Image (cartoon, rainbow, N blue to C red; front, side, top):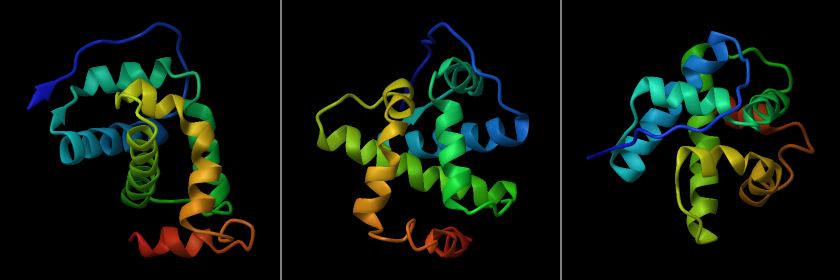
Length: 133
């Protein structure tokens, strides 16, 4: 397994109830999909330095129609969204790093629509989130 250790500059503030699920989700996905172990401090730095992390979190909130998620459900939602972003990175020939994945979060509406046509528009996406557990 490869261990990633680099980080970038600028910071984003999110509460721990949002950062912890993202740390868990990113760590889980990178180990499962890519065989890469991400140290927690590194992941936290990447999240804090991501210019788009608040957009990712805001989009996740918008597709749940205001439903407050407990940590396990939020982790599974983040994992699903991250999987879509990683698939997109691979399909477009981009490298898969924490930074490239988080930087592509603007593509989430398109990716959700292509994988779940009409669900967001019809307000059905909370059912997908509920099915995650």
